[in-house]
Length: 126
Image 1: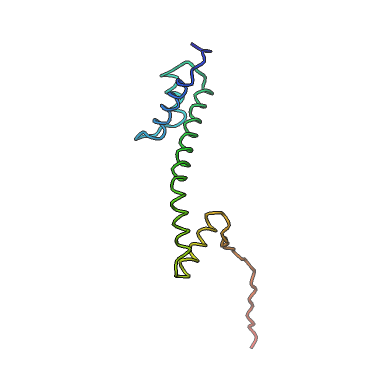
Image 2: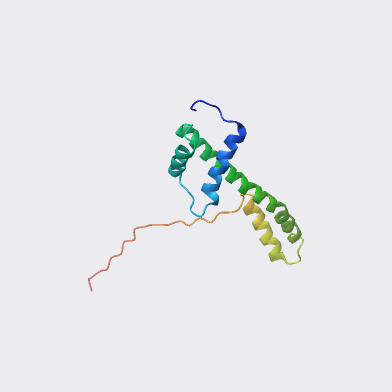
């Protein structure tokens, strides 16, 4: 049936299959194995289309992580705000450091290798 357009539901089913095989399997598959699987299981689309399903599964995975992290963000922010009111100056400073770090404004420590030539001479005259 080459050329037949799949419904949204059919595409989502294939993306779900890819997601399960790629991220929820005991032995995750590679893209090459996914394409072989598609040819053997479906056999109705091009490799380019099967790669598109692969990319959609990755997008779903990434969005899932972002969603999970965003759910943690509000309680973490509330805890930082609470700790900013702490009596101990060291704790407040650590909170400020964390806020700077999370916003990407932290001071980065840079290690630099300095190489110099040092000339040493020993006089043999007495």
